[in-house]
Length: 83
Image (tube, rainbow, N blue to C red; front, side, top):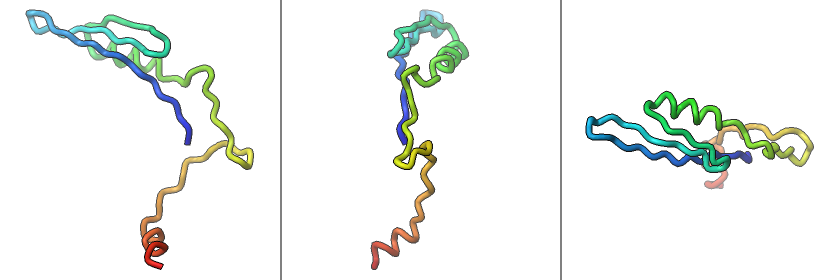
């Protein structure tokens, strides 16, 4: 299965009172945000999790969309190796 990924750069620092804050940047779009709490980071990531506009799921050789692979049958794989 072909997929896509998103990369983020996160910087976190604390001041003398122990308050943490930081910045986050989405690598592909260069969008960035300064934050003071984790909820803000999660919202920023959620907004950027959509596939990029150029992302297309390639069809299988038979023309149908790619399907999730079936789970591996370990027992039959072991029998095939033993034969």
